[in-house]
Every structure is written in C-alpha cells, then in structure tokens.
Image (cartoon, one colour):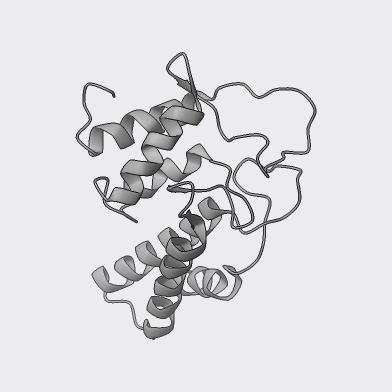
Length: 169
C-alpha cells in the first residue's frame, strides 16, 4: 500500500489543483499542495527505511528533492520576501506556516522568518489570522470578505514559537 501511494504522489505532484482552501479562482500550483507532496514522499521514504521495506527508493528521493527545489524556486517571491500562495501570484497564504512544522525548512531560516513577518503584517487582524490574501493577484472566486481561521492562528503561534519568538507567540 505504501509503495502504491508513494508512486501516485511521485507521478502526480506536478498537477495543478484547487489548494487546501479549494478556492474557486482556478487550478494553480499551490505551494501548500506541493509541500504536502514533499511531506508524503519524505515520510514514506523514512517509513520504508525504518521498516526495511523492499523497493527502489531512488526515484522517490529524486521526486522529493525536485519538489523541494521547485518550492524554493517558484514558491518564494523575492520581491515580497515571502513564500506565496501559488506560483502565479504574490499573495500570501497562512498554510505556508506549515513549512517549519513539517521540517521542510528550519523555523529560523531567513525565508521563513520573513514569511512569518509578512504574515503578521498582512494576514493578522486583532491577533487572529486569515487563511489567505484576497486581491494582489489572488482570487477565491467568491463575493464578500474573508474571516479569520483559528487553525491558521495556531499555525502562526507554533511557527513563532519554533523560531524562538516566544513573546510574539
């Protein structure tokens, strides 16, 4: 079962999707979706190693590493100094706060610290966190405003804590 699931991820991670929030703005290469593909491969490889499961891990490692490089290249917006919602926008998404929580990137990496800062500046209202940024190239395809989302607030607290910013957390 593990091998079948890992092969599926390896063969399909390049697909566009609707993202964690299932926005109606069209399919894109959402950074969070790519991150979860990286997590699936990384944890699957670790599990196979730990349990000494047979199989050729080289293609899985190669795909995992490709995902990593692509997220760092296309998911990072140099002008914004932040990881963004998807490759075609400079809008923020709080789901990127999961990066240090999944051990994709160190919580003290300059890119993660900058992403946290941008999240605080852009997605926080009265200490609560919005899921994503509307406008600036991002659309969820719905009319009206966006409310804060508790899970995103907890992600921010965890990311701040892991980065050593306890007072802010």
